[in-house]
Image 1 (tube, rainbow, N blue to C red):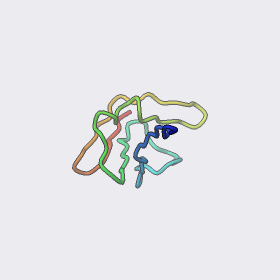
Image 2: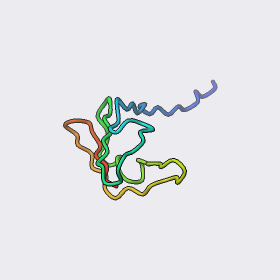
Image 3: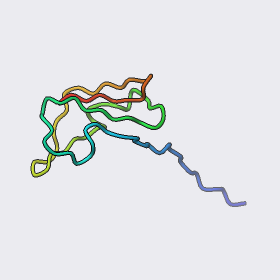
Image 4: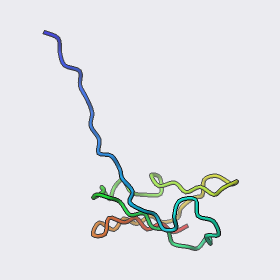
Length: 79
């Protein structure tokens, strides 16, 4: 008998919306950003390492604070 191959299965992360919207322009650096997820997320996996912001022409922006609010399935990001 041949052994069955082992398979991994991870849930797909689904973002419902962001505020400001993706590729928004004219957003001030002190604006608080929001990410609304479609399903519950593990609070240990939502942080400044796993959420990346980019500025056109500049590249990655360092986030200072990422807070996940379980009740609303929302991440709040402060730059």
